[in-house]
Length: 265
Image 1: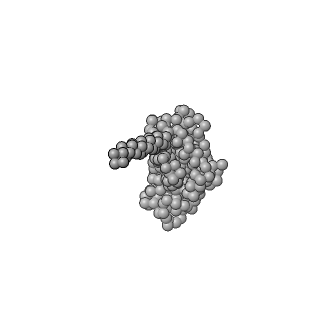
Image 2: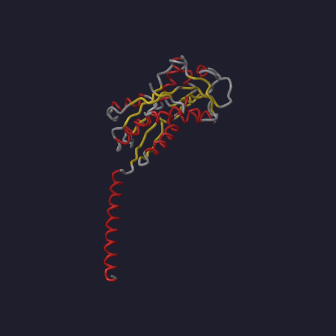
Image 3: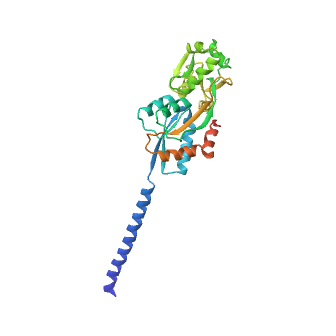
């Protein structure tokens, strides 16, 4: 009996070792089937707060997917994608930039969809009195006004439409201070470097030192629509499409409506 004890132990050890090894193989195969995935999202600066929250919510649903955002003006992001910058998903603050990418074949066919809508507002430093309408931009009530650079910032393009509709564009241009995106417009206003600025309504809650003076007159500009689409040159088209599907779902939409956006009709 004593002689058989050692071989028996060795045999059992071999069985246990084989089982453990087989279990290890199964685990490594399982890990290989669900490798971590990173998708890069190029998103308009006005989406920053809402998108950060959406990304955190999505991570709880898909822990193996890491969403890395890049924020900026839609025009700048568009040009970066055209020049080969890595991006799996583009979320623009206006159709124009998406149209440009689509015309160059950089948008995955059938992936484009309009997700959100927004409104334009005239803002002033908190506590500032005497400014109550966009037309005040042509008066001495406003010495300088911050606007997004129209060549790349949709909010700046919409602002020019508003002031053109009001017949005061040239007067406003003479006192305009141009910014690289709406977040910079907010900063100029909050710091009191300008008397007013034009941003989206959803930007204001993140700027406690700024206040809404007026909403843009109805019909004075094109509808503010946010389209999103999978980028053809991205490395993770399936993961990007899945994230886009979630953004367009009721759960994803709820994150954006919480931040003041409206769902696109």
